[in-house]
Length: 316
Ligand code: GLU
Image (tube, rainbow, N blue to C red):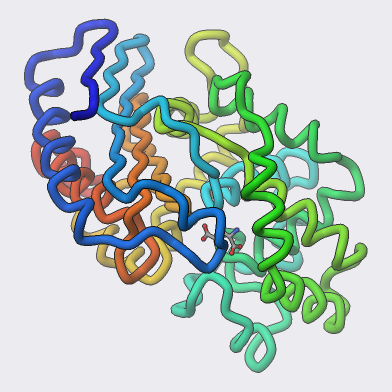
């Protein structure tokens, strides 16, 4: 049985909603499957589930496997987008990447080849790979990892070497995306180097607690409330959260938007970061995935939390 650990006390209503959500999530872990297209991810224990909450007053709650390290995978696309906006600005970031849901799988090449030279949005592989290629001119892996450490308030974030090797060995589709972008004259750098950095950024190891901190920074307009540091400009946070809302959960983004209504981003490692209104971040980890590639437990837990605590963006 996973341990429940509570830190600074929360209101009883919030605490009981989280405990219920945790139990609901845990009960469905057996209905999902861990990702196996990256062989190292197949080693995760599908029964794992953890939830972490952090708010702007420093209240925190963590339930279950909230300290277990796992690879950030596509949640890194939020960090890549934030950094691109920071160093390149809005106009340059979106000069070669659009802001539209793709309606295709995260690693699809189809429409990129037939309908558009520009990737549909920064939260699918093609979009993130494009942003990494421009970022790579200025920043190396360690500098980007430092930004991830600051956003997640987690100095222990590092490269999971085994996941990175596994991504590197099995990442031919991502290389194909990089080469396709190169062939269209959109990607400027070296496709191999870009793919390599992209693999590394997917292999950063985080916890549900790190994702709760990332959610809090996004929820709080880009400001770390504990240090006073403005990590992401306010206007960029609006862009990032809008894209998370519309494109953050693969082909389940529309339904998640309706049912949960919170800007969020998932990854195939089982992570989910949520940035509801009101200076609050929620991070979840459950490697058993549903048919869309989202954590079954995390999605169910968020549905419950949204209903119980009125987190939906469009609830009045
Ligand atoms: N590294 C994974 C890939 O590009 C990330 C996928 C994901 O989490 O959506 O295939």
